[in-house]
Image (cartoon, rainbow, N blue to C red; front, top):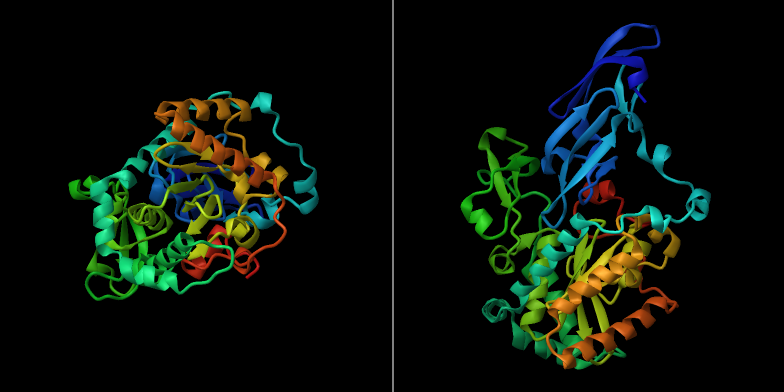
Length: 427
């Protein structure tokens, strides 16, 4: 808490300004750039993160409560109301405003994590329009993957014969021929086709840049779903101006640009997999990640595919390897949306403590209503219901071993970025 020993508190854009009393009783003016200690983690303030203001709008600050409020942008492009009490994350250190160490101040101990009570369902929202709108927006994206013209454009850039030949040489135990093809597609996408972007090279000199601010999207950006455009500023010569990085949300456009972060990777990969005839689902993790699943007729189950990591059938990599604390994970296809959290989390109590946006019963009922609107024939209904029963059995089954890729931290992205997100794991 800093406000008890400070006065003249105000917010100048993203800089907190206050007159703070030091140990000698003198009043000292101090400033603190909030971007150096606050981040945006999928629409929520993240203490210990950075650069929240790059994806924030409609910011207000209430001085007596030190309450910072705004709308933060989620990884799917939607906006979510968010607020944080600055007294909880900032202290007066001898007349100087400083962020409190988030690890020592807010991280629960193991004993606290194990023994803290689960949320009281009756105290959680029985309906949540913002939550459902987010599901609806993500579901609407699935029509892009089913488009025959979009799939044709994807097949035009995929070396199908080469992938099929490589798949024919595989002999991975327990997999079918189509599963081999899926692994080949995943590997080609990662190693030969798509490129990860931390920041783009300077458009003038080609040297390193840093993300400096968000730019106004052009009509052409918006046409391809890029509501966010990052401005990357040259670190050698800022006079070179901003290199624009539109965050495209159109998978066909991504076949051309072939670059991005996890949102672009998953978006484009799902189209590529669908174009080869795979039944594929887009996976949305509410803790700021996206990936894919494809159905294996040979295994009679859905297979986890993360194109960013070239990971095949390694669902525990996020919780066990990266150290993510999951809450909601949803799978989207053109025919249904499913809550698949329990494929990716075995820490039931830890995950349930984070599921506070919706009562479980009403959420299940709302999803059932959504699915009923999409299912058009009895044969499809029976197929999906049989799969879902098998899926539920899988969720409650105990996994007896972990694959090597499920025990390592995140591999993609700069070391600094992965560290900020807390996804290095123990590797």
